[in-house]
Amino acid sequence: MLGETTDSRAEITRADTNFDRSRAIGRAISSSRGRSSRRSRA
Image 1 (cartoon, rainbow, N blue to C red):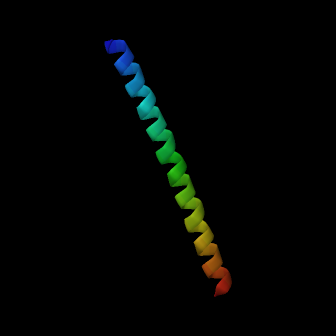
Image 2: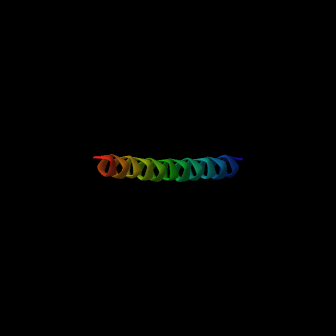
C-alpha cells in the first residue's frame, strides 16, 4: 500500500514538473514573439 501511494505521488510530481516546464517554454516563446513584433513595429 505504501509503495503504491509513493509511486502515484511520484507520477503526479513528474506530470506537474513536465507541465510547468512546457508552460515556461510557452511563456518564453510568447514573450520573445512580443519583443520581435514590437521591434519590427518600431
